[in-house]
Length: 190
Length: 190
DNA sequence: CGATTCCTTTTACATTTGTTAAAAGCCGCC
DNA sequence: GGCGGCTTTTAACAAATGTAAAAGGAATCG
Image (cartoon, rainbow over all chains, first blue to last red; front, side):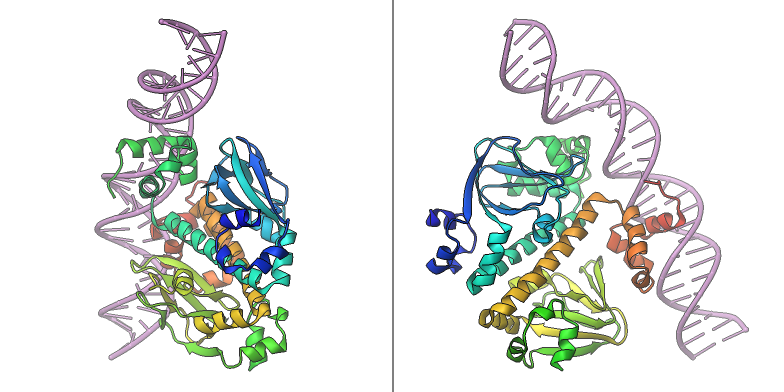
């Protein structure tokens, strides 16, 4: 079981068997069905999740799509998780049989406090998150929806096909009509 | 000197005298003049900076303004600093007599490696950065330039007055003409 | 003091994007 | 096969934004 978990956690090669002993029983596995709610609006997001298999997405109360994440990725509602405040975001399972691994906020904090190596692991992991978000946000600033759409098609064609176009448009911050225009090629060339 | 530095570093209350002894001589102070370049395009950003006094800004090679930071804040070129890759961004001093404290990447890494408490400090510090960036990016997604401008006026009227409007427009991602329209009130009300 | 320069606003026009509504495609199901 | 229900595209119009160019204001410098 321990080894199973480690496989799905980034940077786990920096951890020793001792560290895993400390974490004994604190990582849990769960399977979600389509439209299951993992984090609800107004509720504190208590867990950090790692996706083993499947697809998950986040949306705002008004329905806007914030992100999709698939197998191999991790997620949480950052603001709610770190500050332990009610989430403004809803996180749902997008596909049947989505398999997740998760750990509770307080257990994670205990690991950091008791183990220098777990603290270093968290530092690397968080660093990666920081860079991911930074890149995402830079793309958002510096590229228009047309560019970002075609880059998505390049980078994640597999995942795109699993998501309705209305959601993709919302994610890109444009209307579905505009996305149709982009796909039709009825779009300025840059 | 040690105490001096601690005053300008967030979460420094979590550190003990021992930790500061480890960091002896690794924090440096420097004073910049208007338009001094702190990080240049193509160069690896080696330091994490804390602003004691003054104003600093970042821009892309095409001139677009990415951010301004003032006294009390910290900054670095995240991608370049963490991944030790050439920076795509230029960071400059915006005001005469800007006073900075900084520490080298390798020294910081050594502190993390040798001290559990420095690692925990970094974790908190980075967490704060992560949340700051997340908030900034959510505003970017969910609010239009008009809203963001008036919120800036609310939140940082002092700093706004120190920055030319052309730069503010660029920061908001709109043309200076549009910003003029917003300021004139010639703008849709929502 | 006048000239130069920089910063900001204004005007006019072209382009892009959202909105609304309707049509076309697709799918599953009775 | 054909009838809903859902997703995607098309069409037509209105609103918002960028671009370019000109003019107003303020600060600087000789």
